[in-house]
Length: 48
Image 1 (cartoon, rainbow, N blue to C red):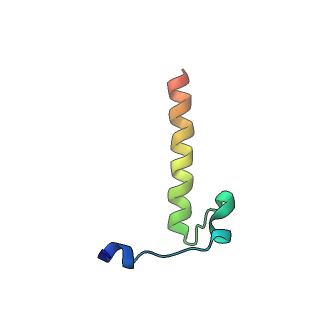
Image 2: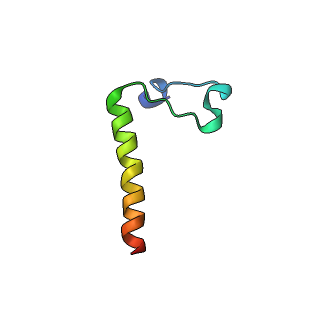
Image 3: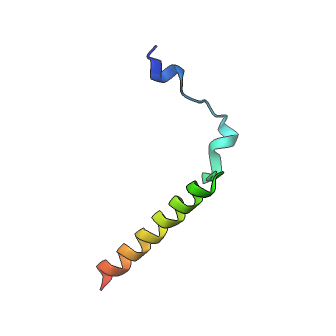
């Protein structure tokens, strides 16, 4: 088995369903919101 396979986390099926997004740190929240905002702004600019 490769080294990267051994270091992977495994998640239960119940934990991975429903598209639940876990943003534990403020930095991750900021990056996530900035990415969503960027997509919306890009769509608006391309629509003009």
